Length: 91
Image 1 (cartoon, one colour):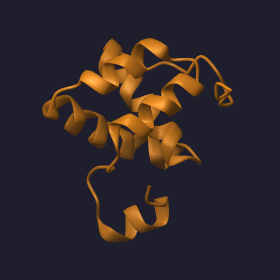
Image 2 (tube, one colour):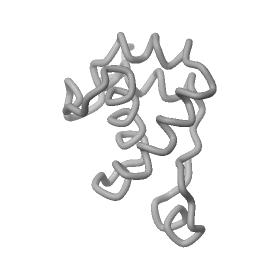
Image 3 (cartoon, helix red, strand yellow):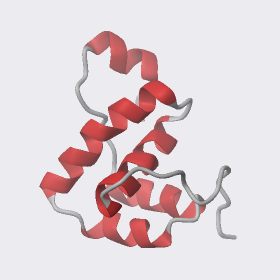
Protein backbone atom coordinates (compact mmCIF):
# COMPACT_ATOMS: atom_id res chain seq x y z
CA UNK A 1 0.00 0.00 0.00
CA UNK A 2 1.00 3.59 -0.53
CA UNK A 3 0.80 6.22 2.16
CA UNK A 4 -1.53 9.20 1.82
CA UNK A 5 1.24 11.80 1.49
CA UNK A 6 2.68 9.93 -1.50
CA UNK A 7 -0.76 9.79 -3.14
CA UNK A 8 -1.36 13.51 -2.73
CA UNK A 9 2.08 14.64 -3.88
CA UNK A 10 2.02 12.35 -6.90
CA UNK A 11 -1.28 13.79 -8.11
CA UNK A 12 -2.92 10.36 -8.04
CA UNK A 13 -6.55 10.06 -9.09
CA UNK A 14 -7.00 6.59 -7.65
CA UNK A 15 -5.62 4.18 -5.07
CA UNK A 16 -3.89 0.99 -6.17
CA UNK A 17 -4.73 -2.22 -4.30
CA UNK A 18 -4.53 -5.99 -4.46
CA UNK A 19 -7.97 -7.63 -4.32
CA UNK A 20 -7.01 -10.74 -2.27
CA UNK A 21 -5.27 -8.58 0.33
CA UNK A 22 -8.24 -6.23 0.64
CA UNK A 23 -10.70 -9.13 0.77
CA UNK A 24 -8.92 -10.19 3.97
CA UNK A 25 -9.23 -6.64 5.33
CA UNK A 26 -12.95 -6.56 4.50
CA UNK A 27 -13.41 -9.83 6.41
CA UNK A 28 -11.54 -8.33 9.37
CA UNK A 29 -13.87 -5.30 9.32
CA UNK A 30 -16.89 -7.65 9.43
CA UNK A 31 -17.78 -7.44 5.73
CA UNK A 32 -17.73 -11.06 4.45
CA UNK A 33 -20.17 -10.38 1.60
CA UNK A 34 -18.05 -7.52 0.28
CA UNK A 35 -14.94 -9.70 0.65
CA UNK A 36 -16.47 -12.33 -1.64
CA UNK A 37 -17.44 -9.68 -4.18
CA UNK A 38 -13.93 -8.21 -4.03
CA UNK A 39 -12.50 -11.52 -5.25
CA UNK A 40 -14.95 -11.70 -8.18
CA UNK A 41 -15.07 -8.06 -9.28
CA UNK A 42 -14.56 -6.90 -12.85
CA UNK A 43 -11.76 -4.56 -13.90
CA UNK A 44 -14.35 -1.77 -14.22
CA UNK A 45 -15.48 -2.29 -10.62
CA UNK A 46 -11.84 -2.35 -9.49
CA UNK A 47 -11.35 1.05 -11.17
CA UNK A 48 -14.47 2.50 -9.50
CA UNK A 49 -13.31 1.33 -6.07
CA UNK A 50 -9.82 2.72 -6.72
CA UNK A 51 -11.24 6.15 -7.55
CA UNK A 52 -13.70 6.21 -4.63
CA UNK A 53 -10.97 5.06 -2.23
CA UNK A 54 -8.95 8.21 -2.87
CA UNK A 55 -11.89 10.30 -1.64
CA UNK A 56 -12.17 8.17 1.52
CA UNK A 57 -8.40 8.27 2.02
CA UNK A 58 -8.58 12.03 2.44
CA UNK A 59 -11.08 11.52 5.29
CA UNK A 60 -9.58 8.36 6.85
CA UNK A 61 -6.27 7.67 8.56
CA UNK A 62 -5.87 4.23 7.00
CA UNK A 63 -5.62 3.54 3.28
CA UNK A 64 -6.87 -0.02 3.88
CA UNK A 65 -9.95 1.34 5.63
CA UNK A 66 -10.50 3.85 2.83
CA UNK A 67 -10.46 1.08 0.24
CA UNK A 68 -12.83 -1.04 2.35
CA UNK A 69 -15.27 1.87 2.71
CA UNK A 70 -15.08 2.49 -1.04
CA UNK A 71 -15.68 -1.19 -1.81
CA UNK A 72 -18.79 -1.30 0.39
CA UNK A 73 -20.10 1.87 -1.28
CA UNK A 74 -19.54 0.56 -4.80
CA UNK A 75 -20.89 -2.94 -4.09
CA UNK A 76 -23.98 -1.71 -2.20
CA UNK A 77 -24.63 1.48 -4.14
CA UNK A 78 -24.48 3.79 -1.11
CA UNK A 79 -21.92 4.74 1.52
CA UNK A 80 -22.11 3.40 5.06
CA UNK A 81 -19.81 2.70 7.98
CA UNK A 82 -18.04 -0.64 8.17
CA UNK A 83 -19.59 -3.18 10.56
CA UNK A 84 -16.53 -3.09 12.82
CA UNK A 85 -14.51 -0.05 13.85
CA UNK A 86 -11.46 -2.22 14.44
CA UNK A 87 -10.21 -5.15 12.45
CA UNK A 88 -10.53 -8.64 13.93
CA UNK A 89 -8.54 -11.24 12.04
CA UNK A 90 -9.51 -14.92 12.17
CA UNK A 91 -7.10 -17.14 14.07
